[in-house]
Image 1: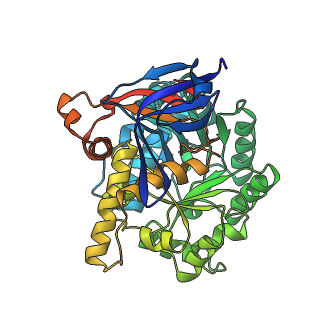
Image 2: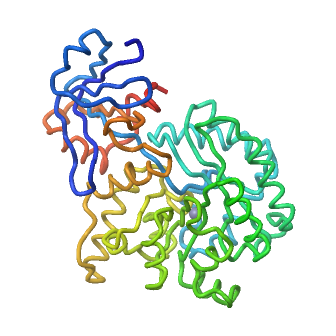
Image 3: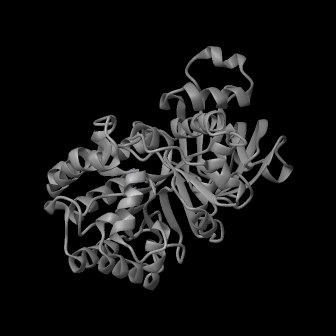
Length: 419
Ligand SMILES: [Zn+2]
């Protein structure tokens, strides 16, 4: 029984989206990497295992997963956010991403980016890098050093951006293939990453789609974030029925697991496409959408139609690398839609938490919940403010999500190990 241990504290997670499971002063038993069960009293068979007691003030929750984040935009958080998407890309983002042609610049930015993922308790993430493979490799090395799990994509673009960020379709495809060969371990995996339809010709999209199918690799891209962008895509791809159909036509939609960031302005037909495909995740990035005046995803409508909705910070259009902040923003923006757009119901806190843990985690496998046989990925939270001791465990969690800083995270577990 050497690999079995128990953690003691207030254990909170979501099994279903509508409610938090709260186990006060309980034990969660871990066998190697996975959850065995949660017990109020430890059964006799576990009486000799090691126990880590985090005390009455600690809550133990699943660690966070970010399904949409741009590593090169780390330094760009909060900058240029008076602009809308296309202008923001042109005036800030592309200029910033060009800097990653210099590996020394990547060596300065990426270690700090990865440290921040760790600090914020985001132990798994789906990351856009840049077109520059030498810098992209620095990002992988840093993730590995910090023992975090991620999907990382080399960004593909061959039109409608500054020349120094464009590659020919053939070159972009070959570089994607060679980047994939650089991945060597289970925790960090490649993902096919066309930036978004306007930056890719049909030829490039077709090559990437084939590669995703052949190597059974997931896909991440952007979809219907901004009204002008949707019109632009219509003019660039007049033969496609709608924006989603551009990706579908080139095997980049739902053949493999597919992350579609934003997905705010979808036609009824596109909503039906997403709800009929279990591989499709529409990734809600509320802070980013507010900052760039993009709009608000109709998240409860999508959920009630059975669509998988994930959550992402989308830095640097999102201004904080924090999933608690993303969770609470998703709730706040849903309330605004409810008030101003007469949307039937609001997203509850437990639902938003469920999206950031269970749904986001499902992209990685059995991750994001404390049910039996899930990978034990967890955070131990203890607010340094002793006044918090007056609160019930669920109130401690609510306060942490809305108010606390990452200083409250005192331990991080990935697949059963403290990292
Ligand atoms: Zn993005």
